[in-house]
Image (cartoon, rainbow, N blue to C red; front, side, top):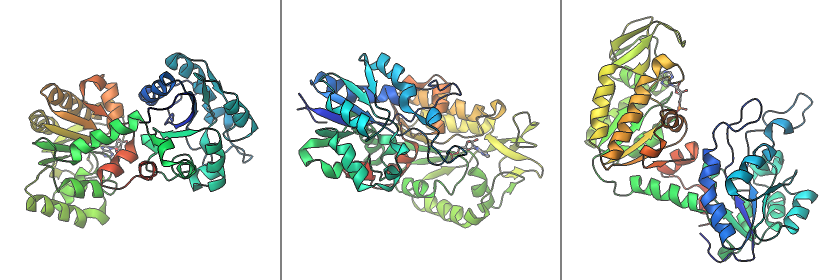
Length: 399
Ligand code: AMP
């Protein structure tokens, strides 16, 4: 990150897209916490900080009269908490590039922090609009992008804005660097054995990642809804489980590729099944290859939990993305939480463990194991795309 910021105004794109409850209180401030090292480093260098972020999808969820729901999507809700955790009174501009933002940025003193209103209140944000980006750039001398969670989007505040700064006046932030280094530890010559755990609902969302991982992982553990498309590909009986019929052939190809590459592609030996998709459903354990009609697999079963834990705990590198069952329902959360335990044990044994975003992060947090794994990514989609080998526009723009 830039280290010559004395006397400068520094525009930092952060990812403050935090979950809020009905009273607009922050329910998980992880993303704010993870942005603090960059913010504090810039302040310690004797600079002023202007923060910008998106929050939710305000233009997709307009009020009935077509106006933006500012009460819901305003970043003003996080100002008080931000003030507490930075330790500096954070000022707030009720617009992103309007008169108020401009005046407040202009009069901001060294050591001061200004937060701009939600970038997505502006139509030009998502379209990468040049005029909007130019106005953002006018607010500061230097630009730092620390929003890994938004790095896969070529938006005005992540990408276009960089065009208005000279190479020596823009850089990635500390969180970005951490995210990239962690992903690289997995992608480039990982310590072996390297085990990837992939869960989640659909195989169709993860095909590219599976395909890429088969090039270099040693074990690939499959869980979640995507299991049953693979089971169908092996001519198993899936009952009412989630199967993506259009992807059965692809699952066959992935199984063949795993064999070809000597990758141990494991499917759960047994499944915890439900008689309906419901938190209070009746449950029964069945071999995953023989799920009777009327039953659907909603979690990996007890044998699979033990089978997977053994592999995970003897690995030196572990990548985990996606829950192994419908963990939102307590009855079907055991596979995911036991997997979280196994990943923590592997870490204690010396493995490098990367949790790749989204629901697996929330599972690790719920299990209270966040500080027992090596790295938790703040970017779900961004981390997936990075691991798939894609170039993320937000990173490319400043690199
Ligand atoms: P993803 O966003 O693809 O990581 O998927 C996460 C979702 O997958 C969660 O909401 C889980 O409830 C869901 N999921 C996990 N296992 C299953 C399953 N066996 N059947 C249906 N949905 C599942």
